[in-house]
Structures are given as C-alpha cells and as structure tokens.
Image (cartoon, rainbow, N blue to C red; front, side, top):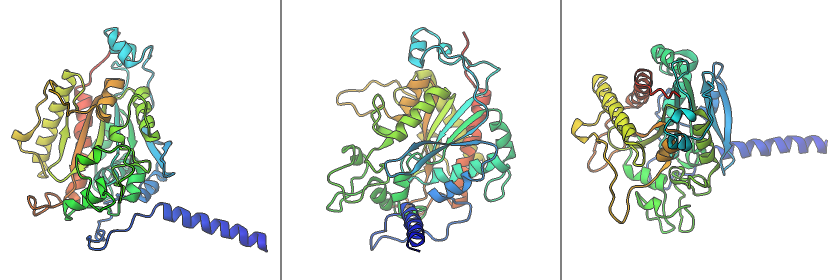
Length: 386
C-alpha cells in the first residue's frame, strides 16, 4: 500500500512540477491583466506549440536543444535534405572564390528556408504565425479556416526548417499572451526586465549587462534562464545551447534564406543586418520593398516608403555602435540571405494612442511575410555551381 501511495505521489509531484514549469510569472499589482479575449487562432503559448507539434504528420519534429530552464527547443523539418556535396566550410569556400565548395546549389536542389521563432520571449507574435504556418503545412489552412494552399504548395518546393520558439525560458516568464492594446511600458518591463529597485533596464540598456545577472529584479523575457540574450551571444564560442543549435542548423542546412522573428510597436519591417555582403543587403532591401507593397495591397499595416532602410556600406567611427548579432552570424556561417523581421505587437503609447493592428492583422502580416519569402527565393534564387 505504501509503495502504491508513493508511486501515485511521485506522479502527482511530477505533474505539478510540469504544470508549474509552464506557468508564467505573476503580473505585478497595478499592471493590466493578461488579455483573456484572445481569438482561438492566436496561439502564442508554449502549450500551443506542444499541441501543434503532436499533430505533425508531413514533417519531422526534433528537439534540437534543451534550455537552461529545462524546456525543449523544437525544430520542424519539411522536405528532404539535398546533398550539396560540401567539401569546405563557407568561409573557406569563399576564400577559394566559389561558395559551391561549401554547398553546390543547382536547379536539381531545393531552396532551403530557415525560420527562427522568437529569441526574445515577449515577442509572442512570431509564435502565433509559426503555429499557424505549421498547421498550414499540415492542412493547407490556418486556424481561422482561411485557405493558404497556395503558400503550402510553394513551400513544398523547398526544404523548410521552423523553430517555433527559440527561447522557451523567456516565453515561460512572460506573463502576457498578447500585448495588443497595452502600453509599450509593459513590453519594456517584462521583456527587457527591471533592476532590483524596480527601474527598467529598457532598450538598449538591457544589452549593457550580459549575461543579465546581478542587479536584476525581474529577469526579462529577452533572456533565457541563464541571462543570455541569444541575439547577442558569443557566436565564436556560444554560451547558450539554443544558440549552438541554431548555428549548427545554419551550417549543415546551408539555407538560401533565414529570418529571425521579432516584434515592436511600429509597423512591420525588415531589418538589414550590418556585417553581411553588400549584394545580400541589396537583396534583403528588394524583399523589404516587395513585402511592404504586399502589405499595402492587402490593406494591413505597412511602413511609409520614405522610411524604408536602403542598404549602406558600414563605415563606423569610434566608438562603434553597430553590433555583429545573430543575423550577421547566420550569413557569415552559411552565406544565407539573413534578416531580422519585426512584427507590429499592437502596443500603444503617448505617440501611438491606438493599435495599428488587430489580432487578425497580426496573423495575416506574419503569413504574408512567409508568402513573399518563398516567392522571392523561388524567383530570385542564387545558384552556386562549381
């Protein structure tokens, strides 16, 4: 009898531990409550990812890392991997004047698209888009029932790798499932975190203490449980297992295009990385213009043309302000067309008294991004031949 009670007690403890591991940190008194009116399709939680990945039949799900908090970091693979006949790493191949020595890409190989879900746990919009994208790859429809079979058909011509959430620790600590209609200070507080006296680290101050340890009140969702901001890891000697996994996928898969998903309070935008080849900056800018025009056509939030960021040659003066971040690392390890994408999170401020977007808009903005990405890489793919 004691053995039976011990057995069931162990199960209950394990169950409570599991439930607790997926619970969010409490919201401070005086802060607005978590949104409770989220539509069914707005699936932004770790449990939503788990539920969706259990349904995957046409792709392959792998655990590529375990976070410091003990959470699995998943990748979903669609399409068979081609043999690129690699005989050198990317940088050595470029030094030999031909990237095909790293990855031979001809008409007989599929384009590879790598989509990296939020490395900052408060930027939940990317999770919403990717859970729906996996659902589209499985069924042809998003969770609203909207048909995206055209997008699915195009993606089936590629090899697609999706990391639904690259920082589950940060997502677990974020107490909000959406920030739409909330003040941007809530993103600052729970995203970048606070000091022990309650003052906010803010942006870019949250990058001045890394790993984020010591004077920490709320550890922001920017960071994993070890205080590592994956966007600014040590890429020549990574501190985070999550970073190592992302770089390893990039190295072995040789993606034609790679994106890291983020969110901010202004209209959606593509950010061109600093330390990448000039021709690749021009390609990213071309995609940015195409995507922005698509947003106009679809009547969702877009960036005014005069605010689009034309590529520039880096010529910094001292002291430097331009960092070599994760996106730069993706390009320099594989030659991929890499960029950061910022979705509008719907927050408000003194300058933005009303949200630019609805929940429907956020999902459409995400899925239109993927539609334009695959169109671009199918139409404008760079072939590497020996």
